[in-house]
Image 1: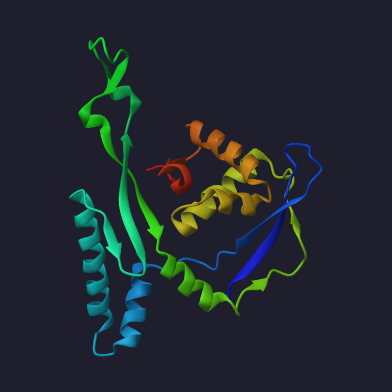
Image 2: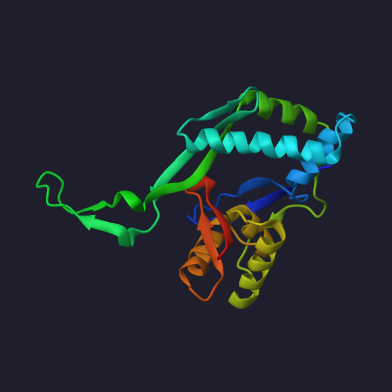
Amino acid sequence: MPYYYKREINDLNGTGKKAFRYEIRSEGNVTLRNLAYEVHKRYRALGEGEAEGIVATFLDAIKEALSEGRSVTLDDFGTFTLGIGLKNEDTMVTTSDDDAPGSEPNARSIGVKAVHFRASKRLVSDINSRCRHNLYREPGGTAHLHRTQLTREERIELAVAFINDHSFMRLGDYAALVHISRAMASRDLQDFVRDPAVPITTDGVRSHKIYVAVR
C-alpha cells in the first residue's frame, strides 16, 4: 500500500505564503528478476528462468531499437527516446570557421547521456485508478522542510548508502532522506558531485537526472 507525505516548503522568496508538496514514499525497488517472477506467476507454463529470459530479451530489443536511433513506443505505456550530449568538454576543438567562432565538439565526444521516458496518458490514468483507494497519508501531520542538523559527512554517508541500496538516487529521494527542501538538496548534491573525494556522480539531464556511484 503506497503512503504519501505532505511536505511544507520553505518560503525562499520571503512572501510569507506557505507552499506544500506531496510525495510518494518509496516502498523499494523492483528488479528484472522480480518482474520475471510476476510473469511466471501469471503464466505457470513458463518456468521462472524462461520468464526471466523473455523479459531480458524484450528489454534488449528496446535497447537495440534505441541504439539504431529509433524511439520506442509501447502501446498504452509510454515512449522511450535518446538524449545525447558531450561526454567530456575537454574534447572540444577550436573551429576556424568565421561564421561559427569558438569551440565545437569533436565527433567522438558526443554520446548518449540519457534515455528519456514519457509515460502515456493511459498509463498514468490506469495507475491512478489502481491507487485511488489505496493511497494513505503518512501519519505525523505535515513534515516541515528545514535546515538539517546533519553534518556534511553524515549527509554524504546517507546519500552513498542510499545509492548502494537502490542503485541510484533522485533529487527528491535525497531531499526526503535528510529532510531539507529540494533547493537545498540540489545545492548539496552539486557540491558532492564537484568534490572528487565524494564517490557520487550524475547520469541523465534536467528532470531525468539521477545520482549514481562513481565507477
